[in-house]
Length: 172
Length: 256
Ligand code: SF4
Ligand code: SF4
Image 1 (cartoon, rainbow over the protein chains, first blue to last red):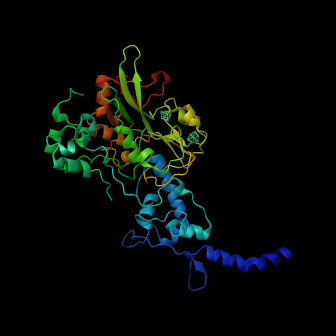
Image 2 (cartoon, rainbow over the protein chains, first blue to last red):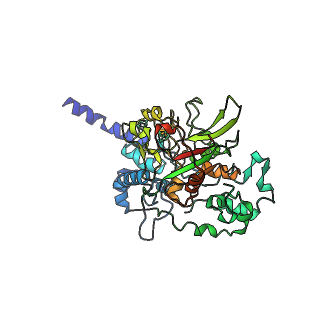
Image 3 (cartoon, rainbow over the protein chains, first blue to last red):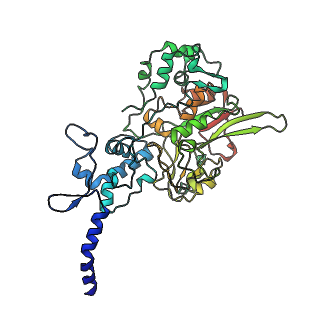
């Protein structure tokens, strides 16, 4: 009985603490604080906002990501639809300083709210990263032959260098 | 390699631009026609391929570390990931390293890149208690870091010292090369490139070696008799490092 009493007495303080801790929460119509989830950059298709219906993604995104993880890791299937990389590309702004763990980060906005810890970003990129297959350090250069062929018209024309350097870019 | 006729310009030579005159003559559109037989993104890898590499130690230039830097850049380790800064040099990840050999008798010095040999019978997979260390159908040996518990048995079992353990929290990993504290990693044979376009793919190390003009590394499908690597191996042979272990490595060497 006393335990219940103490719990009830501490409840308002607890709620207050929760609310102040989770600053980016917005209070909506019913008075329930909701996480302020950053908007995605684009819609997946004309008929669908996300890669699956939004309700479904809210509830079950982890199942999709987990399934895709094993498909990619073990079977080499790299379709973009349920790839974590594409979630990040669409939901996290480029060049942001906000990292996973910060409640302003798309994933953390909800995960902080729900107090569910994710460990994805111990290994995975938490922000979009521009990728190229072109290595500025190595392509077209031959330092061990005492020359840099980008300056050497006899070896490669500018046109060829363009082909060599641009074709490796990632296709969207 | 020198026996090859000019009109049999391989895709790798073309991409690398190391045969400059021929590269000039071809328009950019040619690249598109080369992708015709690539594995569709939604299709799993199959045991019809076995990816491997042939490394000619005689062509590998002493002191050149282009393959190593290219791997760092491509996969975001070493100099390409400054957040791994608390580990000592011995602890830091090393996916590929240059090894220099000196013959005590003759004084002959040669060098070669050494990385995961993508064994057909990989000891790292045998000893792994969790199934994290595994071999794909196409012969590429990987660590599933989602499952890896960081016990490091595989590091002890690997005869080639190919694996590294991550000792500290990392940030800014590349999307196609996730890596993090408490897990083991090694050369993936640029699996993300292979999956994206198996027909055209060249690992970053081999690409850099080509760009340097050394052309010491040939990547390809060991099960395709017409691939450059298979033809080279058939005509001129290639050796495994520690062939006595019977691991049937996917990486073969020449001149060792
Ligand atoms: S070289 Fe080492 S890590 Fe690579 S497959 Fe063989 S045993 Fe495993
Ligand atoms: S460190 Fe990871 S991959 Fe290596 S044996 Fe242990 S669980 Fe397997």
